[in-house]
Length: 304
Image (cartoon, rainbow, N blue to C red; front, side):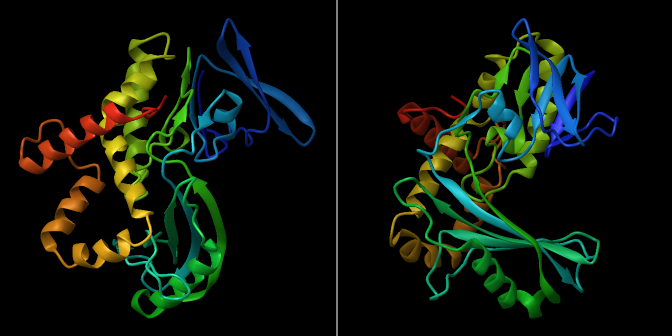
């Protein structure tokens, strides 16, 4: 059996309960994952293991995943809110996120419909070890919701608000072993410039299937592949996002950038994982050049 753990749940068609246990190792390879439910303990055996259990990655931690907080990370919150506009296909992001006193924060807010009568509404701000975020996420999320109620038909109170620290830009090590690999948020495959992680989750899911079909030992193959695909972009994105946390930088450059259609188009392309290896225009060449230079200066490369 090939085993996938996603959001703390086994995804193998067996209806297994949330992961709460341990792993069995045979010859250095994961042989089974242990589960506990209502006092019952049992194992689910596997040949290969894909860990996609989110930013906290409890199973990843058990396997040795380490988050290195010396690069930029996010402090983010997410909630659900009833909306009269929840059935239409749209997504809205607001780069001009402001705090309680009207100050411009180094983050953004988002709203998108779920098709269930509710929207996903959240906020995120950037931080580093030297410059931690000094915001209360849940009150900020409530304030953001109140500001957008009329625009998006929001009603009622925030439901199931949660917040978390979000590793970004491949700022984790020990992302693979002989027959297991971390993907998506668990591997810190989150864009440091915009907090986007869904596309990286889909991409790494496809990549891990391909690499598992071709290699018996993923220990070095998988982190090398992640660096080949995302290392340069994540490295320069981490540096740029770190600059935004410096006092005064966002206040000085943000409004000017948001008034420029050219700069916003460029930022959207760089921030949106939209520069491919086949692109040969000047913006793509600059981005790749900056990524190579940044990666060469990193004391710790992404995924290492």
